Image (tube, rainbow, N blue to C red; front, side, top):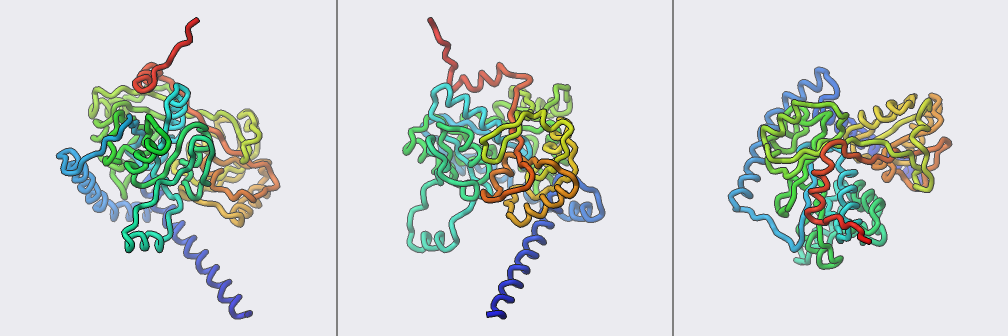
Length: 407
């Protein structure tokens, strides 16, 4: 028995080391993609990845060509489809935008369904997929994160963003499936959806969108100009031409001729909407209490996150007067364990933190039974349109005109 316990102990220790190794590799790869650190290692890795980036570019071009020549055809469903997406990987502030669009449409009487891929959601075990393939069984229906009345799945099964959207949007159906054509048909048939929002769908060609809303982060619009895996672009900048509307996020009100000129060079007809992400308040993890954002002023805090752009989160805290005495960054979509949270909270308290702040996306990935000796909040982010409000209203009104009350 003692020998068996030793084997279990060493196997767990070995698996933890393997996990930590791959996490360090992912952090290093992210630094290369975003150009966050300049070192000999990142420069060598960048040079090695550049040929793969050129190969990926050719694959992307071929895929687009096959759809343009109608060798592959896009599906048309029985209701309008609004596509919201990026040219780049992560960090544009897409989720609050999807939330705002869905809320506007729902409040105007539309039966809205959000279709998400559910990035890093828990997939079926391999053996189940194998049995389906051997037995020629039908694919399972999409995961129902919310049926419009209740949230039915947690963040592990649904994915961070779909779970967040489901919690914040009562009355809106949220479905997760890699096959979003199937998910769209299911939403129409099962829930009577009369408008679909294709979340993160700018590169999802099998489903034809009626409106393509492209998000561009003003603070880092195109990265280093390279495609994955050397840069953050998913497809060439020239594909801006497919956008019906362009939402320029994280703006500060100042003119940015480079970004606007780049947009106009590739798409002179697209209308530009500018918005800023602002901090609405701090919230407890259970959402039962909110604290005004002014509580950050003069506060000594620990900040931790596992998102694509941690810089903007941390800058938001310091801009509101907080002093970050301890900050910890994890890889994007990192799922926290009680043990590691305990360790970082110990360090934070040792350095004088009186409370901890994380992002809303990270809050949904924390274990429900985790308790800390200092208060823990997440930062609730919302968007405010700073330019192009009439254009945004025009885009929404195409599918849901605002009705005025008459006496």
